[in-house]
Length: 193
Image 1 (cartoon, one colour):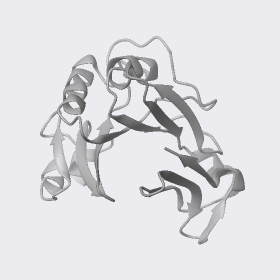
Image 2 (cartoon, one colour; image 1 turned 30 degrees about the vertical axis):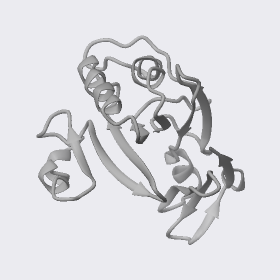
Image 3 (cartoon, one colour; image 1 turned 90 degrees about the horizontal axis):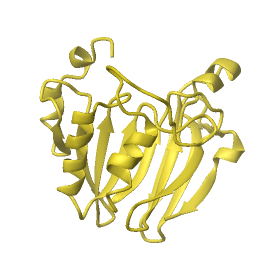
């Protein structure tokens, strides 16, 4: 987070209509945002790397306060490079791993729809599915192509996720804006939600 607040001040984001709020009004980590598309209300919840217990209590409150929103969570580390929820012993400053996040804010909340993470390098966009207490399926993705960039010299890669609300399809692609084409054909697929 080298000078994250200097480069991305919270005051700048508060100007936009999509701004929701922050755990700490002075920090860009642990924030949430709104988006309405195709008649569906989304809430995007951004969580720090191994968030603390206090942050997860705050996040759970945000999710519960928006029961009619599809919640999309993005956090630094949640899935492993094998596509499984990270479950390691954590302590000190880094308090909650992927399994803790699942148990504390995903499993209890039926409006959690999707989770994105990175941290562990994978040449592929890996998907894992979990289930909430009420039986809703949560799509969980790891999108971290830093190894792909190093190995193949690719530039400007995006994990492109396109929602078709009418048909409830999600189109997934690795796309390079620099090369203007898709890479890794196995990462070009569709998931029904």
